[in-house]
Length: 385
Image (cartoon, rainbow, N blue to C red; front, side):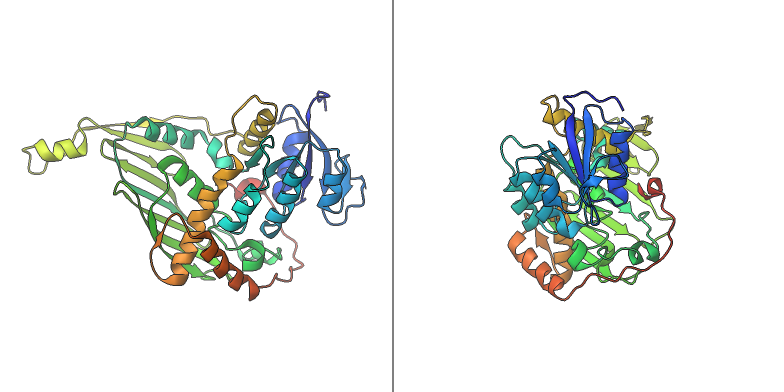
């Protein structure tokens, strides 16, 4: 591997499935200007390990070694705040796997540790999807007019029971702080607010352990209201197969419909509101034109975010997903759970202190599970949606 001597020296904490993905991207030269110098997981003894780099058994030992410029945290969610704070307190750059914590309160506490010269980023890889980028540009241009309705049915995050059985932390309040909302759908909630903005209020109906032997939510339906009067519906599930991925954004002057594979754009010749007020046709409708927005989606999303992180450290780029951006999607996920627990509307911004108190009560009655000793087949490419 030919790496410049000035390359950003990266350590990885955690050696699970997603950590292996990041390590592979670095070792296979998918991230220029980056060098893997160490990894950390239980069982490490500080010697050279399987990746040809030092393998530490505790994250603090890795931090204290002074050999890293930046650290990727890819540990179970419950340790994100603890490890992330240690990284930031040491003045090292941080790439955090999603979500940034169990709650908005944890996320805010983590952000408070970030120094002015420290680069903090979050692995929100779907922000690099060319079709989501196109949707964002179109909405930002104002060509759709005022937003009227948003709908995302995201139920093709199917996970079989074995996915949870082989983990001691997934789908527990103590280990993950939630289920489908803070794990799989955190990407969709981020993209939705990144493109359409934050809702002002929501009402959610979460079902807990509907499809799996888990204590957290694995099925969610939520209604959202926006400042301009637009409404939205979000549906997420890990219990449907084959499931649906359909994201609709309806504006006064046109619409965008992403069906999980392609993006269709419809443009009204006359805005709906203007046509509504002026037409003499009793059953008339504005003339429209349709096009399929073409884009090559065959990009390595995780490598692109890592490349952007390295470039930002070198002062060559603005971050695609700054650490602070993780608060919005986490706030929506937390609010949906809070709405279900309270049985009513939640007005945003979320009361982070109140939510954290409710979550801590759940955690107090939760425990990590005993991992099943099961042989599993793992194809990480099948986990991305």
